[in-house]
Amino acid sequence: MRILCLAFLMSTFWTPLASAAIETFRLESGDVVSGDVLERNADRILLQHPIFGRLELPVAELAAPEAKPPEPPRRVDRGAFGSGWLIGWKRRIGLGFSGAEGSTKEANIDANLRFDFENEEKRWKIDSVYSFSNSDGETDKSQGHLQVNRDWLQSGSRWFQFANGRYDYDRFRAWNHRVGLVGGIGYDLYEGELWLLRGRLGGGGSYELDGEEDLRPEALVGIDSNWTISDRQKVELVGELFPDLSDFGELRTRETLDWNIKIAEGSGLGLSFGVRHEYQSQSDDDDDPNELTYRGLVTYDF
Image (cartoon, rainbow, N blue to C red; front, side):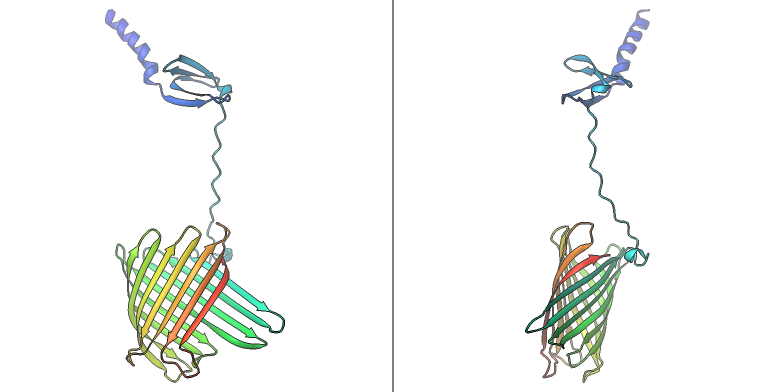
């Protein structure tokens, strides 16, 4: 009989403790109370406090739970301008304009359209630029290019293969139109959280439609660098060297530096400041072998 009574008393004593759970409650007065929850219903909460023993908290005196700040709305990609086209691509358009009216009339226009895409198997970059300048009714600059680059990636490897096609137009060069095609291998030299350095090596050729020389075989040595300064700022550098394989010692180079800034997160608006430099050793007497172009654009990610 003693054993049965002892078992009954232990069961009676142990059951609420076994089901107890330590919780913390904040009252409307600002006080905070913690303890083992012994009982809970719609009107009250019974606690076992380590110092004051059993406490009864009326539910009506509990402070309302703090509301969590709403999450910012996520942008749903519906393609270019909601058309369903180019879903999953980064799409950017940029426009810069400046002018003057007075003793001298000037107008300068720079436009840029760019598309980027990357997954585990491939990487695309499509970039087009056009620059125009007019002074006192005469055009003194009209140039642009369209470039398409495709990388074939290898899972788990820093190596990749690439192909690049480019069309250049320049009204004030000995050649007005030039097309080029190169391909080869690339390697991610360094890939960190904020900085990426990538190298390329290959070969191909260029064709000047209006120049004295038609087809020129070329090698390619290139480097890409992306530096993420912050969530809103990024610097991109591309340098390319094209040695002429048919005439040793002759070459051309191309370098671009772009600083991209987001004006406001989620708005798609931004600014882009860039510098482009080109050098060609085989230039006519009327052509400067160096050409430097700088620009400032207002951009929009669509």
